[in-house]
Length: 414
Image (cartoon, rainbow, N blue to C red; front, side, top):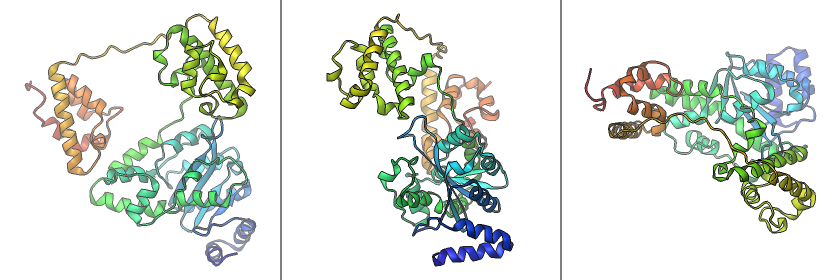
């Protein structure tokens, strides 16, 4: 056991009774550690229980996830990284069981959970464990509100802490579902949480000085409410692919059949659909169902050898299908008069100048959807400025409503 690990064990012994210390020491046997940051690789439920007990004894916990969306279908969480002062845990999902302890940890409002760019994590945790995360702080959001132009984890840590962390592109795209994971992958994973608590403390001080800490808190709370969206119904699932509107009803019927075939193959092979068959190849086949498959770009020898017959049968069947027409219920579009367009231009100018003044991206100042409503229906601006809306934030209304109301863009006062 290395010296740094011994110090950590001593700290643990000082805090806990002898029995707990002996149990924790036993849990260390056979664990892997990185040269940069010691960590405990949690692979059993017993180890997971001990890890949760340590984490819940802290006011803040750093969190990150690794998934296998580039390599497996349907995707799932493959690794959970959790950190607190003195400890870094890399948790195999097999150890988490049904997720009860995970839901309890993430749902504890007394513990702050620190993420970096948490939107994907929120969706994944809810999808795989039905976990809702309370009390979060997102360091990527904080960086945006501090005027950072680059918000990747490595860039933010370098900007605020002066620390360089290596982000190997190969490891960013690796299959996190493989076992055993190589040591360099585990070192990469622990780096994603090693500095988050220190980073958050630094950012909070800077945000408090410029009066924007409450802004980031509200934005983080909104991100915590993101949820995984269930797939579209089978009959319209193809509409996730851009460009389908350009197909004729007959071509769309064929395209839909190809899409459904691709989905079946992806599920059988546990392979992401885009790696089974590319969208451009699907469009070509929908328009040319009787083509020579051996000459189609995107249909390699492996696909034709294993799935060529299934594709030929799908195309023959699809040609006999009736045209497929998608009934879309479109909202009636508002009429943009010259006065509305001029008002929109002036409101955008105000937002751009305010963003420059505060060193913030203009989109953070006020949402475009609200500016459109204000431009089209200026008589309803009181409600827009004072009442909660789906897209505007409390902090935005508090900070800028009076300034917006004072702009000379609203026409005659009534």
